[in-house]
Image (cartoon, rainbow, N blue to C red; front, top):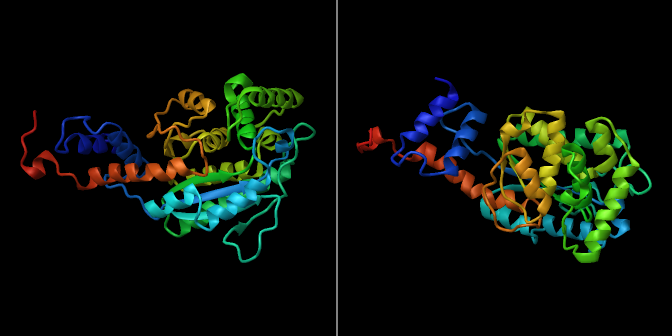
Length: 334
């Protein structure tokens, strides 16, 4: 039997009606197949939060000022943010990485310095990044994941902090899925009414301005430094055969982008929640995936992935610890 057939047999012959643990069974099967084992494990889970600023924020596409990026990065690193709380709760090793924040963090701050530039460029006037900056971001993202793998981490997730970063995410989804901008743009951090119409107008203008032809050029044109690092991180996590917990809208946009470079990436990805961001729901449908949670989350930072880990651990626990009919001396219907 194939590893998939062996895993399915093990799952089906636990002391329960077939399929009665629903999506937990799907998760256990997927992790077992990723790890090529009948006894999958979650080991040293890590959360990498990449932070960067965006030049397009100058076009009023977000209700928050750019200073919030560095302030929230500090808040995450010092334990006060939502992702900080959920990582502590669930035993996840959290690291905050300065990919391109327009601020000089003090040396004693628990933020890892990996600044490529002081934010991306304003796409209304020029591409977000040069090709060289984008390539460097991909390499750096991969290096952070490789470092976690060397420490024994086999389960990883990625968060982000960057005022305005739903806009580049919308543009990447628009380009890679061929969807109208209107279907790819949502409220983000709270844009509504006329402000949402303005955001859509800006992104339509940006999209019409450029015509990149490769995934790398598209990412450099429409992405952001933290998104590009996330893309490199996703690609390396697949290379390291990790279980990859995908957070919400921005992380999923980075995953979609990474899949243009590594088409088999989705095999290793568990989609953790359905964001309240309209375009995320569309993206999940296009990817044909079923997220674990639907809690109306739209915070970002990796929060959905951190919260979902306890459910993923439950999937691993039942396949490893639940008795089979034979072990327990319980009569099966067959």
